[in-house]
Image (cartoon, rainbow, N blue to C red; front, side):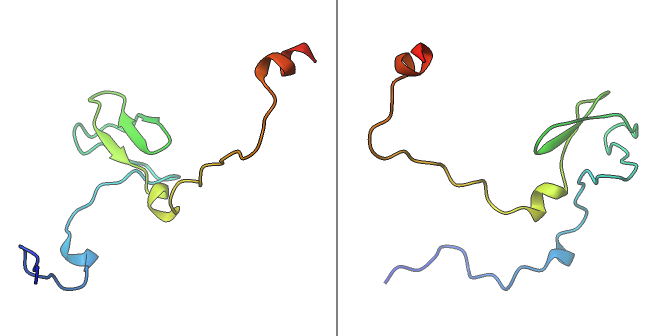
Amino acid sequence: MLRPITPSRGQFDPTTRGYHAVYRENEINHCPGCGRTHWYLGRVLAECAFCSTALPLQETYRQGPAAAPVFWSGRRTSYATLNAA
């Protein structure tokens, strides 16, 4: 029987993780690298405008997985036909 190499860990406890820097919306966010407060915001990360330190956005942890892809079945009209209309 196969067994994992690492021993099984207990249940995840976030209090033992320690300091976890994230960008929080509607708060003053100081950069952990340089201490300044100017950020470039993306969809998943915030980047310090001065030293380029990247932090994940806190809101990305609350959202679920990405949207499911849409698959087409059957026959679709070609782009040439759509442009002619």
